[in-house]
Amino acid sequence: MAFDPEVPDPPRLDAAEDPGDYDAVEEPETRTGEEGRREALAEFLEDGAWEDAFREWADNAYLSDEQFEAARELGLIAALDFYWNESAGDVGYLAPTLAADLPEPWDERLDRNDRQDIDEALDELGRTTSEVLENRYIDRGSEAFGYTWE
Image (tube, rainbow, N blue to C red; front, top):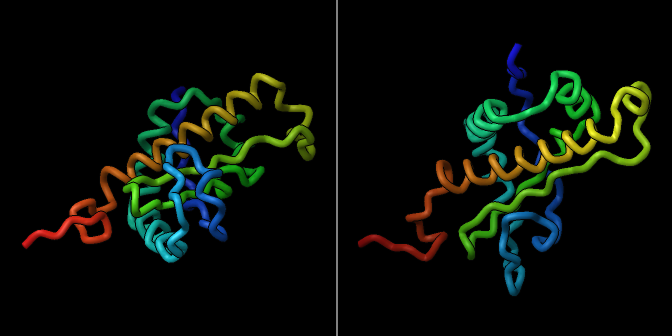
């Protein structure tokens, strides 16, 4: 049977982090108070970007159902975070990793290979979501990216 998980709720975008912590985003030279864009990202995720990205990711993911369930139950999927760097026109992602000490029953059920597979899959889910946001949901022709059409 193929890996075909139900789409979970989109991640909650918590307080803004340092842009340099995010993968796939250029760190701006100066912070410009772009934390408000997190609300826009959250809206994009709710409006279909998360479902689009998740389904695209799941079609190519090599996780078992048990590995996915572990990631979901441990709150790792909900802990994904994204950062929109308007000045560079990109969306970075921050994918959580499994801690060395897992709560029961996962501490005995997930071996080192399972943990590595989950970490890699979460990174790929973050990258896929970042690309979907950048390429399908963010209007790059807007004034936010320095374009004005007159």
